[in-house]
Length: 130
Length: 257
Image (cartoon, rainbow over all chains, first blue to last red):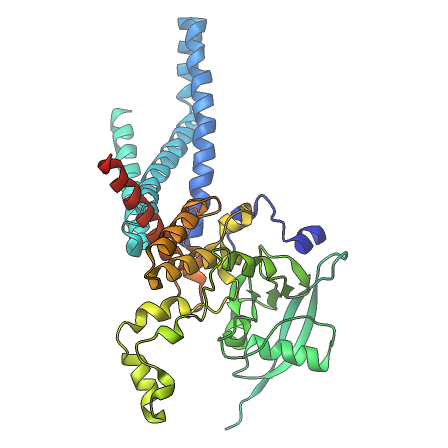
């Protein structure tokens, strides 16, 4: 810590220290975390799809396992990550080229409200279809 | 009118190069309306003469006393002890982030000012001679009023409000991860200088600087600089405005081909 203080060199994880920070910094950190999470999910997804190469029995066995509540919770987490990352991406895309900068907070809150609505609709559809 | 004095506890980060940083506790008796800077002054005067901290104007004009109080970047001269004590007990006082610490609460601002002058232009306090009304020529009773109503004054005063306190650098998550980033204050300065200049070459040079390595594209749009700026300079808004101008210029070039 002494070396870090003297040099002003940053800890690589300082962006995760959100104490005393405002909503923009929270959105920034969440965007990074969901981005990392979604890239990790992509590889898991490709790994799961590779089970198809092992024949129908392996695939059917995985499908039966994937209906467990744990996997449903993971699916919900992925959906939340996708919704946050994509909708926040719209805000970043707009403000990043100088558009709607004055309303960036309103934009963030509105898009997050939309994310919650879309998540609830997805949950409703999932429960109806079983 | 006398103000009731109260004893308030603080924990202050103590650090010297080569030593481990530690928090040291102090109790000070201060007046009810005292600011955190008053408490630090009292500690220095009555308890520990080795405490290092910066201060000058005591009224939020110089930016020297910027520090982290209860985890938030603020000016100690305008942060009330009573409010800070309600937030956290004891009040925690630490130096700014993302700048080398010289000792205790003092950070090395050389890198910060080097970035501020990256454009090779003096970007602070240069607008006064260009003001539409020369304040010095006015009779004293009219000075304040004339300055306030002077045409187009807002264009000059927004960045003039920057007191170069370094708070925007401390709160910026991009600065925390990227040494090459010019930072919010310097980019706001480039934007402000570009607004003031009438020279197209200078304007193009400044935009190229903002578009270059270490420029506006390294900002990750957390808007934390704008949210924390004690002078409402809006560095993030200026960075986004520069981006908009760069995109417009590129878009225009694309269609002219």
